[in-house]
Image (cartoon, rainbow, N blue to C red):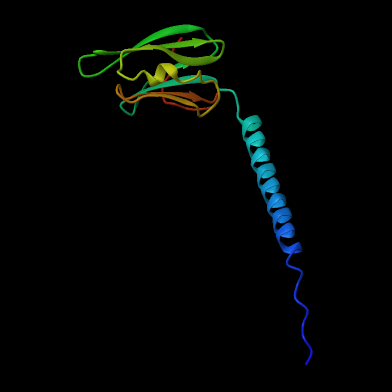
Length: 138
């Protein structure tokens, strides 16, 4: 009777480990390439849209430095201070309980947002060609 030789089991774990390392390296390389593409393909914003309770209330140019006090609520009792400086927008001060909007880094690229959920405020960076329906505030 002819007997088949068994596969060398000592080599199999090494082969599996090597293939796992190659697969992990390929996945990391693909993820890094995707992140680099995403980072360098984002465009600088031209304007800041202020949305309160889902309604766009103002649009400001990122090219002019300014501070804007934004009041929200039924009796305008909530307050946020929007700062536009060096082509970036940030919230400097807010009277909300968590102040997450103040802790959020400055936004400057199209699509970036700063959100204050307690005040139902969203600050969004817009592209130059965005037609908001509102004239730019100067």
